[in-house]
Amino acid sequence: MQEAIEPLAKFHAKVDKSGRVIIPKYIRDIYEINQGDFVVMIVRKVRIDKKDRKVYVLRQVKFSAKVNERGVVVVPKQLREHLDIKPGDLLEVLLMDHYKSNEHAHTTTYTYIF
Image 1 (cartoon, rainbow, N blue to C red):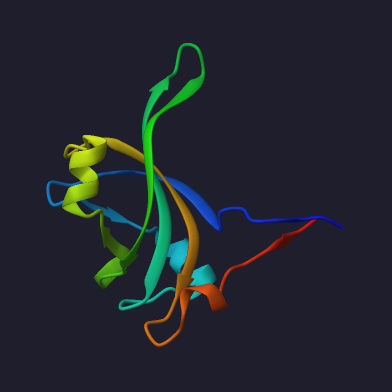
Image 2: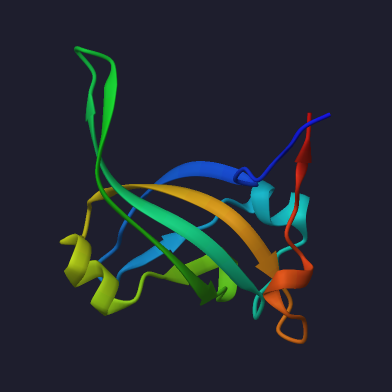
């Protein structure tokens, strides 16, 4: 068997005017992610070319953030500026890990076994 670290989930989201994205409820339910928990995410600014069926990753960054009500996560302003993320931009979000506020991030990493 071979081990690999892969995202727990991958989804697309549009950024609102405050730099927020929402983790879909079904993903929060699967991993029991609640308000006040923390997530580790990779956020990619992407452009989709439907004609050529390609997704171009323009920029990406990895960060951790606290989950707010209804699964809302704020992409920090400094990162939005660095990635040139504007309201309405399409992001590809990779959920890499999650942990409760009283846990350490390194204790919860999932490993896929093939």
